[in-house]
Every structure is written in structure tokens, then in C-alpha cells.
Image 1 (cartoon, helix red, strand yellow):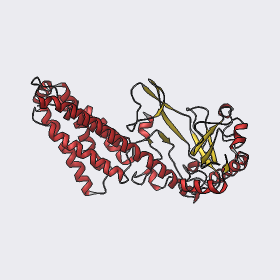
Image 2 (image 1 turned 60 degrees about the horizontal axis):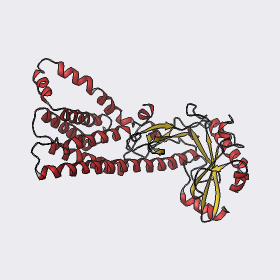
Image 3 (image 1 turned 180 degrees about the vertical axis):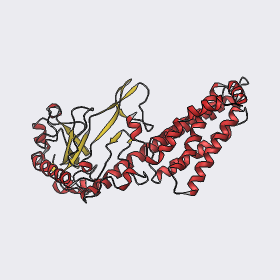
Image 4 (image 1 turned 120 degrees about the vertical axis):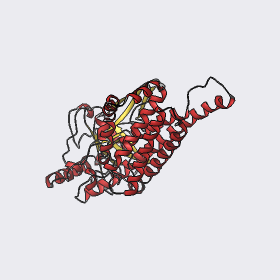
Length: 403
């Protein structure tokens, strides 16, 4: 739950709060004087339709409340208010026993497409946006997959599997786009924030406490990545501490330029020796109780490509997930964690779904916080989220050692 709240963009909080108030508001309306007709109609409403009504109402409340956080564009405000009112009207038609499925399906599909277009254009798919998309997908399923009809005509028999396939395809497409945009935005935000750090400014930028429209994914629990919020700019003492840690790390790990030396010292690769981010971990260092020790980092990172290997930097990791890493450099030295899914059927690991959860038969585990420190003066400084691939390849060709 904490990760979900961290992943809410600041201008979406009003919509989130209003959605939470929908239940109490519904109870007040049902108990109000003159609501007897509403109670009677609700009692006659089939159970699947009730679920659809609730989903449409949640979507309506979120859309009606979004202008409270997006007050800058009259056109956007009109779009939110219009769609919210339309969803509320369709929920009323469903309770009243009138036709609602076709119109609701069209409006839901249009809303989902619009959200994906906006997300692809730079809007961060935060937790409220992702959760609302999931609600809309569930409502779309209830609209398209109608209850079984006792009159089993050929058209009706064929319509159900087509509708079901459409819902599944829509869910896969929406989830994949949200996941891809979140991951790409996280990477670009890491590069941008580290660039600001190296210049001595706020690594989070002014927008860390405000708008989320500039790729600021650093405080979001999206795509399995949980970044610690940036906070205030580092003080002069914190900036000096960060520079000292980076310098000591570069000096102490110079002996590991040849990965064979690292292997001789107890480091083991976590995967294949191929790629621009091959991690070597030392299990003994992960349990030795030493934190931010440049002489004994928990992991080393190499680039391995074209028959050459290059030491890129280290990963400092906390011994357990309950202990936050010491921010010796303030917002300049950010720690992050990963949410992974552990599944028993079949056994294995994976990342969280684009909607912030794990698949069926799996549960979420948050690994201990970690922090990268890069050597070789990459663009953006030693605390960039990850050096640019072009810089890594250029340096690998010039300074990499043969395998």
C-alpha cells in the first residue's frame, strides 16, 4: 500500500481522494429522503450490472475530479468533465434498465485510447492512471461480454468469444503500453536527474514536488522499480561526501578492471557474460555488515560485448529490505529497490505487472535498497541511473580488456 501511495502523481491526489469517498457518498444518497425509487431500481438490477455501475461510477468520479489537479487547460477540463458526466449518465441508464452497454463500450474504448496517446506523449502513467485504466478495462469486459441469452442463435454464440478475445487483447495492449512508457520514463528521468546532480542543482528538479509531466518517474512504484524521492538539493557537505564516495569507489575498484580478478576475490556473475550491464555479486559482502565500503562493494557491474569487458561501476546494497540506505550525499545519492514477483507455479521470478501487482499464484517481494556508483566519469556523473549505451560502447572499444 505504501508503494501505491508513493506512486500517485501530485496532481492526481484529488481524484484518488474523491474515488475513496464514492462509497460513503453512495450510502448517503441511498439513505436520503426521496431515494426509495433508487433503492427499488437497485434491488431489481442484476448482479453483473451492479458491478458495471460501480466501475462506471468510479471512472466518472475520477474524471470529474481530475480538473482539480489539472487546472491549466480549459480544453482538458471540459474533456474530463464531459467524460465524467457521460460515465455517470450511463451508470444511471444501467440502473434504470435502459440500453447502456454499446454506448459505454464506445466511451470506455475512446477513453483508454486517449489515455495511451497522452501517456505516449509524455504524461506519466502513475498509480491513479493505471488503476483507472484497469477499472475501465473491467467495465469494458462487462459491457462487451453480455449475460448468456437462453435463445442461442448463431450470432449470439459467436459474439461471446469474439467479445472475450477483444477484452483480453485490450488488456494486454493497454498494460504493455503503460509498462513500456513507465520503464522508458524511469530511464530518461534517471539520466536527467543525474545530469542536474553533476551541475550542483536539485537532482529531482523543481517538478519533484509538483507536476509529473516531465518524465519524473523517480518516486513512482512503476515497472517494478521503487525510487526514493529526491528531496531538497544537497548541501555543500553532502555534495562533498558524494564526491568523496565516488572518488574512493573509483580508486578502490581499479583492481577489478579485469573481471578475472573479481572472480578470484569471490564475485560471481548473476547471468550470462553478455550485455551492457552484467552484474557480479559477492554474497559474503552482502552479509558482512559493512555499508558503502568501497573496498568491499556488494556487486560490480561490467559491460561485456564484442569479446571485451569493461568495469562500469559498483552496486552498494543494504543487507535487508527493512533498512533504508544512508543518503550520504542527500538527493544526489539516491537509493532504489525492485519489486519482484515470486511464483511457485511455475517456480521463478518476474517483475510486477503494469498494473502494480503480481500474476495469479505469485506474490510481491521488495529486495533491499541499492545504489549505483559509476566509474570513468560517465555523462551525468557517477550517480546517473545508468550511463548512456553509446558512451558505454565507446569506452568499451577504447578501454575494454579482452575476455
